[in-house]
Amino acid sequence: MCEVEVSDGNVQVEGCTFSPLFYRQSRPSSGETKMSVLLLHGIRFSSQNWLDNGTLHTLAKAGCRAVAIDLPGLGRSELAKAPAKVGELAPASFLVDVCEQLQLNPVVVISPSLSGMYSLPFLIQHQNLLRAYIPVAPICTDKFTPEQYQSVKVASLIVYGDQDAQLGEASFSNLRHLANHSVAVMKGAGHPCYLDDPDAWHRLLIEFLAKL
Image (cartoon, rainbow, N blue to C red):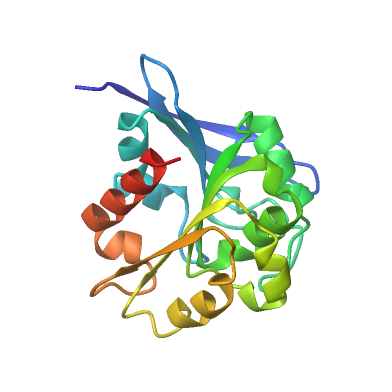
């Protein structure tokens, strides 16, 4: 059985004032690390959810180094000032610096809901730094054109729950323009589909990463 290391830390990121960002990470305790994965989260959530639902452990068992950060103003990064207001696009340099400070490049980014305001500028402007992109009904998808999405060649897995009336289909209608994408609709799952059905979520995730 694969042994997994889980640890906590803090990282000071450019453009994020007053307090460093909190993060949790997991990795295999032995053997080669296949890839790095950055897990973001929605407005009502934090890195704790990725620990509680088993995603951090699942990724480590699959040979990945997984880092889940608490976004500015949320979770245990609540004292950190965000570089943009909720619903506005954050500077792409924010995640560039996160990945540089934590040595994650090239990185797989998992981006649910609120975190779209951070991940989408990063994806559009710095696709060379990403190994893959996994959006889970993120916000701000309407702030980019079909042509901008079509210019992104990064392998992407678009995930959403079929019971997500808020952002599921709406985000997909924009993200479907990504040039190299596949789609996974989770049956019976709502907006936080990765929490509604962790087993199905982990199967989708590991199957996709195995193809990279």
